[in-house]
Length: 439
Image (cartoon, rainbow, N blue to C red; front, side, top):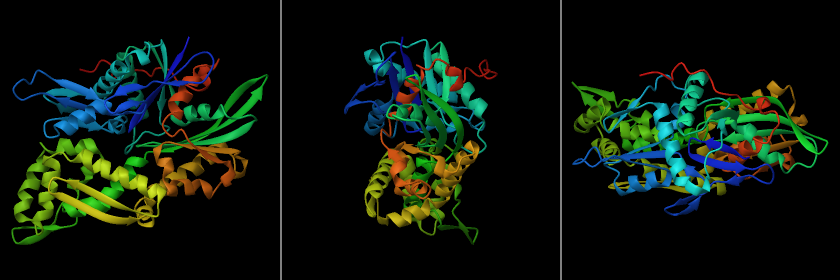
């Protein structure tokens, strides 16, 4: 008897297996560039023009490889978890077919299952899936997100799907190292959300009992940091903040053209939309046509992935040093800036304030002052950002703060959770599915 934990993340997806005893085991994938366990949450769709029915779908590193080989003809989608709770996202057209969110997710999950192959060893009847405390996006609808999850995971071939908060999964992973009773605050920083749970771990008769005390979350995290970098370094070089002339008047270039840079997949969507036609006409009337020309090239040539890599490199460098170089080079475009860490922290100040408020809400929900928290465990890629860590160092003694296993902790903890005698304390079952029979 074993349990499977699935951490479906905005940026990466991780699977972990746990048997009746012993540590959890990560599912590893034989990817093109070497074995990995952090499977990129992305899809690619390709069909040659002369044979449109010969559709090829890939996921994870295989999707990235397909996109890099032919970016102009490959539809590349990532960060689609951000749409899970958004009623405004009903469907998208990909190579002439309609895809709802649950279709995208089930397509991705089936590919994950196929790529894992023998490493997964078949699916257990019960799977525990991580979910954010607060879903990403404006006015997220939690029930809709879970209904969509349920449809997609059932298509994967799972009979029973249980859902647990992602930071709770991380807490179960962290609890392995505890040798005494402790109240633990777990902060999970993903691509789309930042989530917090406070849990009391107590030992009774050789077993560890976990008692949930409080939680909170906010729909901002690493992707929002990325957008701030692009908005300050890249978008101005692509025409944001510039002007164009119309019937003798000087007007500002619409900011909505640059909102798509908040999500990489939206760049590909813009190429065939009304905004793209307007942008092409703007080249003629722009006060600075070379900037709008760069915007057209970025969208036409689908430079989203190269831009993402440049932003990721800057964030990683600024986590290690006080300053770093931003360098985005693609086609005829070359944007290079020296960026002090303090400037980056100023850009993300609004998101940091929201994260800080969420930490305080978790403490209030647990009715505990910071002094009553024995240990703090930070996980997820954005937990490496110094300004994020500083939020906790202002509240808690440094000796109580731990980090590590940034990518594996949630999936491993979810799998270990499957050993609990009373899973109902930690998970929820299938939601009602009013959307299941939609046309």
